[in-house]
Length: 248
Length: 66
Image 1 (cartoon, helix red, strand yellow):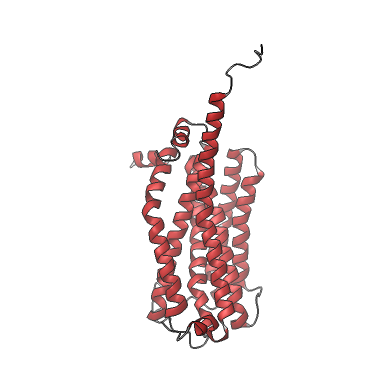
Image 2 (image 1 turned 60 degrees about the vertical axis):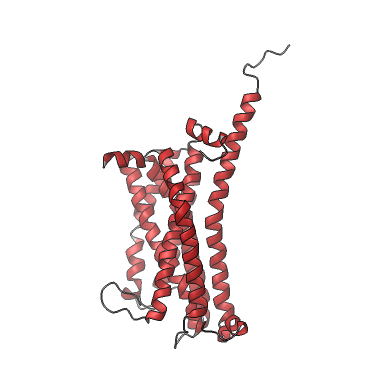
């Protein structure tokens, strides 16, 4: 058990294992994404009330779900780096932020595009939408804060604290549609009780959620590999790797 | 397939521009997420290798000009 944690903290081991995982996870991700996109766009029936505009949920919901889950990953990595001073946890935290920001951006933009034909407006200062906008600023805040420090350790500490404080926002996003009167519709998929969505729409949506989780993992591992190389550029193993043209 | 023709799939009963633009934006962002880190990593490896080669050819002692 402890030897596993020891390995997890070793940059060359993490670099290589991430590369090995990506070799099979990346193709699976791309196939799942392609199948899910075509399925949702062309093969599902339209919603009887929203018409065809509802097809945007096949990207909107997965992006929002994974943007929230990604925040947990970032905050937990931040906590580990803060408590145990584990450098690779700090790498993971730093690499989560731009991916989370991109996914939150997708959720906001696609939601806005869906809102125009459905609600008749691009934007409302609604509880769900406003708290998602705050999530975007939290992600961008971590990215910016990291750049603001010259000292890597101070940056790691400040960003970990920011991401931990920001977790307050996550349950607010989840519960916003129940707590406040909101334009945003409540969740259609429930872990407990009957989902209020037809199977012909549920399966492609579930596939897309899985595909977005896999995509987040791929992007995170790829970002971490680049970040590890940048931080370890003066070590023997990276020099050897660079000398052999990246195959080693 | 749900739609009968390509034109119907593009139009989506008037919702086409919204749906297709949402998917286009998403695909662009996702493509960037998957392409950018690999490019950064390969550039880093190239830079490190170039740096090593430069140093190998550089004189080891400084200030000994004849």
